Length: 229
Image (cartoon, rainbow, N blue to C red):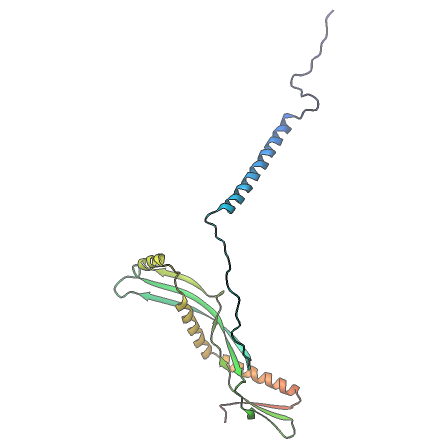
């Protein structure tokens, strides 16, 4: 009589044990997590132990109020200006590639026009007997010093000779740009003086005085200037 036997396949996993594919994925995920933690830790350690890292410490003292003064002027108009300064410096007997420089600097800023009321004489304002007409005698508008905006002013392009480059490398201080700023301020001031900014300020001041005095009850407001007869 023949015996019939049955055997389980040799490759079948035991009940309750994870499959080899899942086990490999778990190992791979664990390795990736460890690698990520090591990378983050290394970056944090390098940033903490970096000997070349810089730290900014503000040791400035407190701001001191040196003086106060009352303002007796009306800011009547503001002009915004921009100029491209092309400054070139050449050596007499050397080519530009050896000695010389050329800098293109964009200067942007504004100029305020104001009328100063602090020097008005006592008879600068006269009122008619019926208190319906008022005459005001004021000075013409003046221009304030140009105010260059550092955020909008910058060196656009620069060419330097070999000697100038070496001098900049050996210098303990960065290149001084004060000359460029002063030149830009002077050009903007000249442009403001040649513009219609002061006339605009005179007209705005006249309009302001007329509106203010009419609000006080005057029906006629006459504004004249000191240089008028």
